[in-house]
Length: 626
Image 1: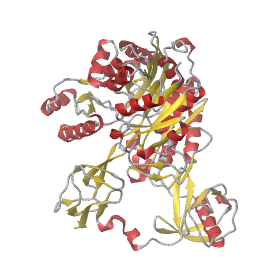
Image 2: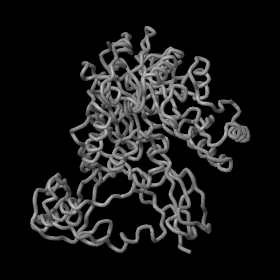
Image 3: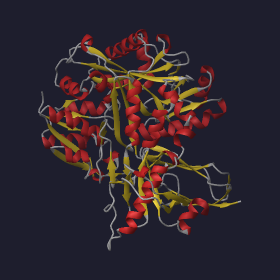
Image 4: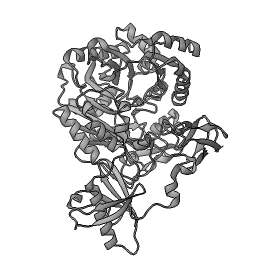
């Protein structure tokens, strides 16, 4: 076994690898950008090396800087984590050429599975069932449109070099194909430097089933059962679980055997995931599951597999990279209970899932479930990287128990002032159809209004705010400071009385009551009180909003909700627009976000150009009402 490992990544996955490496007695080495100088993964490591500016393309995505850091620190091995360079075959080759150990599959396997069209052709040749579609080299728009018509709508456009939902668009009719193709190509080019696409038949009730596989350098390959990742939004996984609900023994044998066959076809070594799409219109069936792609790395959702198998997948990666055989044979790998994982993002579901950035002044995760997190209280969520701040994982004897435990944990999340999707996750986990296992990849979109509806505080939350307001009035300090007097304050009982407060700018009468017991409250300043409930942070003010605050978007100014890059601009001065019409598109935190007109009107000015970098709060355009 080697003695030291450098993780060429950041955040939660770097911390996850460090935890296992420390347990195994290995020295841990971090790399970090200027934006991550105070990050938790840097503090966790035995040593850390600065590798460049905040932008990933100038730091985490520069192979030469990673390898130089390994050489400078004497690291013997490099673990790529997931994302960034984890599936970059050239980087894998460069690591080996530099005399270092690559903790991942051979570059030949990465290349074989890296391009979706070539991978599907290879899998078909190996006898693995693949989704019907178009994998041709001809990328002319006319050819693609013709092939889409041949396949039949709806079709799915997918980036050849894609992953994580980037460069992917569903098209329901021929009239929308040209626009969808253009958007998919732009996103693919920005994310992967490759705008080629393939086409697939779109399965109307698809479930995303994936199989964790492991191979060693002695030619052994095993599976660690399946995961279901069907709960998605915009092709991004939201909640994952293992095993897949409704999976019978015959279907499991078919899909896991296909996954092992796929891995063997490319002489796979290390951790990998073979992803399948299943037609769930008649339940899971062996003849209705097709190969979709293979991720040649560890997955974000690997903890659910760890929980149901009792294994440490990172330890397996390290041992296999050191040349050891797989720790267990297939017959020795058990499956116990049910595990489910929710991805906690810094975003606002009620505002179209816009990313949220800033310092985590208050950050408390429940101790009742496993929490893999890349940040700590006092840390900062920046606009430069993925907005995932933690993963919450529950494990229980039954699926129903695991869902209930995770929903309760999501309800107990406390984060301020950064917004999160904790309440949204809890509502997903508590949805009756999801609990019943009646789910496919369109579940969230079909139920979006209900799942993202901004909730109202309960009487208990109102009572908590009222009591906190009374406490503030009675204990005004001569020199008040934020995050002091009531941080983490939990209420017990209160006398019978009422207080007039403001929520979302509107007055509410909050009655004092014993129901306030147990609510967690923060005092922000003399005017604001935050009450945590059901994964949400309710902000109560003691005074009405100012005229400027009340105006909001009514003045017609379209402001950037975050720092980002203008990647789409569909209007110019003088254009007439209607409420909800897209005006421009921003790219931030690895995603595109459309900004729409708040009312019917005319574009007075456009203050930005395509490709411009903008700061949070910058005025991008101004409308006048008609």
